Length: 616
Image (tube, rainbow, N blue to C red; front, side, top):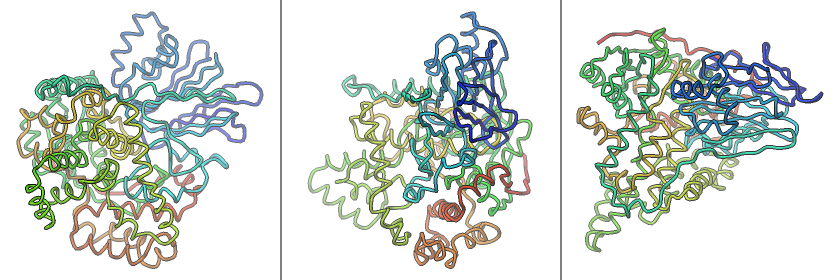
């Protein structure tokens, strides 16, 4: 696949070989390049007069619909690809043409007629786009690696954000892991001209006023959501027989059910061993061929590859496992559907459910509340204990407690004194608070709406965008669709969130097609089995990165606290595998200068493996 790189007004940097070049005055060269790398496909188009050049990374889900529109408008014909569609739209509508686009995309337009560079990001942030801009320069890329090669641009890794990385697994826009680099907000448009940078949100999630006053019934809300879900699958599978990564969880199973309902069944469903058990039976029920992939991963190489591609410790344990499934698909993987985004776009994530439980708790009579307090004091059931603990908390605090990988006290204990001082400034709480404030400015008056918007921003960046950056095929995330998200946001929070039911809207939208055990099972991430942690290369990379001597030498973490975390994970404590992997990546990242990461990006190592497939 490829990476998009744009340079404007930076004469000290040599653009990649084969770059498209232009000139804006004697001292302002312009270059747009497509260079080898991981991530989405990149396409280009140039106007007949040579003054407009468009580069698109990712895919326009509604490309076929747009082609019919621009052709009827009599726009110039030319190459039929995603970039050509954007070019024709831009010629007719200018920069606001991005409002008509759907899918996961990043767009760069060099407009030589007006002497400006236009950058645009898709509505939910599925396809990353990073940049740095000043009065006389602007650089942008769909990956951080190429930007690290620009002298004196990125700066050293921002250690102050280590707590954000460990807690959230990502850094939401506009910040990045480097102080000199920014990333576009989802739904944001940037226009750079010499001496001027203009930013605009061309799309934002809105929470309409008076939804509860209209007494929206759940059945009508589910019907509208179902229509948008089917449309999201339909436009992404138009003209192609897709494949599907089927985990057996609610998200991927829903995509399979929706595909079957509109007669757009995948040609094959691939399941990574350990992610089922009911995936094969579900595929048979839907009339889709099923294959199971078992992958032996070189986890040392996987850690190095993750850092090389992301240039920051944001990779997940699922990445090397999913790469095996993509390899197994081979030529059949022209378009691969994934079910990521269920709780993000449809709502009903843990923090929302805890808040809904808090509201029910507050409505109880005094004696009933006392009885609940006594039961919660035993620590069982866990959700009840969380509810009572969160009863006096603000929404931001609930999210920071429930929807993060490791609680604040546990993270604080991991840090050496210097990092602990940075932790006391509350970087994670600051990030979550900024996202919550953004949601309030868009009309979120209900606390559950605020929590929904925060989860959408964090979850898409962590669970969707990073896969777009690393899996080398065209990926489609039907659940991460802006119209699905907006329809969900327009549903009253009381309908969208059910205390003991995750992603309630999605469950009710597909309940008729899916077995009850699939609909009701809790979320399970794709992680290695416990036995894999005890032997082989995964144990080796953990010991190499988090051994007591190395931790002490780096000086960022407390060696005894890290050892206790490892011991708790080995003893079977749930949910600590992803935290250990983030610690591995953070440790290796802080021990590696930015220049080395830039060199690594050019030759990212493969997580060598043997892929064993079985059909069912």
